[in-house]
Image: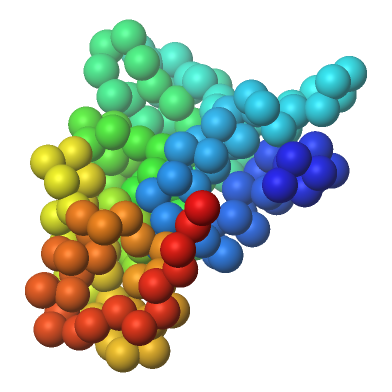
Length: 179
């Protein structure tokens, strides 16, 4: 993992990791670190810009193609309102207050995808996802379809697995035991 992390830009790594491990909550933390230019930034090179702030009073200061979203009087940041990028960013990198402001400005609704959190947002109903509670701190969108469930369930914590099996009336046969 360290070799992949050091040989890949933080944004490329985060995008790949999200696509490969969409059901592992640990990757949310890892992706967040990578996207903020932390651990994955190579020494001596500039980290790719991920967060661009803008003026919360004038809503000015964003690059072309980005919109300035105000969270509150002291904080605003630039957001890509394209459907693909909006749906990639909103479940993982924004809190619920910023998400509400971004939804209003961009004219979009942030919904959880397969494997994303549903603590602050709802799961995408058009994909027949169920919001499963693993603990007080974590809820995740789960696809109860047989193939998707078996593909994902091997990576879940015991708490999420138990809750998902009950919610979906499915038993996981793909459980991987990590040492």
